[in-house]
Amino acid sequence: MKTIRWGILGAGRISEQFVSDLQRVEGCAVTAVAARSLKSAQDFAERHNIAQALEGYQALYQHADVDIIYIATPHTCHFEQASAALNAGKHVLCEKPMTVSLQQSKQLADIAKANNCYLMEGMWTWFLPAIRQAQDWIAQGRIGAIKHIKADFGYPIEYHPRRREYDAELAGGSLFEMGIYPVALAWLLTGRAPNARQVMARHADNGVADDIIWQQDYGDCYASLATSFRCKQQNWAYIIGDEGYIAIPDFWRAHRAELYHLDEMVEHFEEHREGFGFQHQATAVCEDLRAGLIESQRVSLADSHAFQAEIADINAIIAEQQ
Image (cartoon, rainbow, N blue to C red; front, side, top):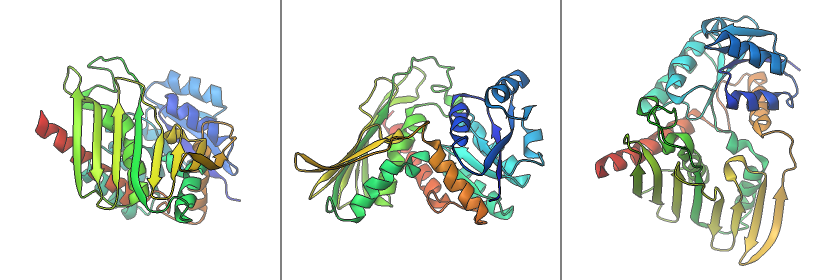
């Protein structure tokens, strides 16, 4: 089995979780980590037994012992960093949202294709066994035709205009930070944009939307979605059909899925996993690279374009309301 050699760009919390889970993936190794601060990179490397710590990112792009770069930095850095990595001939797994506009998403896909490099947005939720089990139940007709999709994702985050999550110059607001999960789940289940959408939003003092509810009409079903920095939301997903429904607690990091007919739970799936769950995504990426693919068969670049188109439309409606 060919060993896939990973470079880590960014030494923050998500990179910590991702690298921890990479230890559970057969046939991969982390060979280098890069951060703006050399000390941050060195501390990260020491914690995870990584051979090389790099100050700045250029050396990582050019690193001879790196096959793929995992990018986990603020949203507005993704396009520049992923472009540089791809142009250096490195494959890229970039945290969500991969970009902050549809134009950037399409341009990044073109760069990947021109360099014959793999590019995937890190929508790790789609790889979780509980989510895949829910899809299997749907495909088997266990809930009939989908009529409603309900999903929300929110945690309270204290406001400060220069805090990354609220900073307008860094694409702040709950839609990019957390709302990407309900957006992506609705797309996974429907595979299409809605016929109509209604949006309600509240705004922080600096104008970014920090509490959003949106409803989508697909003609044959509805979706009710929400995200917030103002409160802890339930963070469950419900997929409701005309013959039953599926409940997924904490759907964005799902361990469990429950299948109901009326009020009775008739089947239950539980993943007793170790780690955070990033290993499922990482395993799939490594398999894709060994197969010589330059695009994921699970989270395609067309899917990433769709996420951006959905977010842009929601933001456009919010802007019209201000």
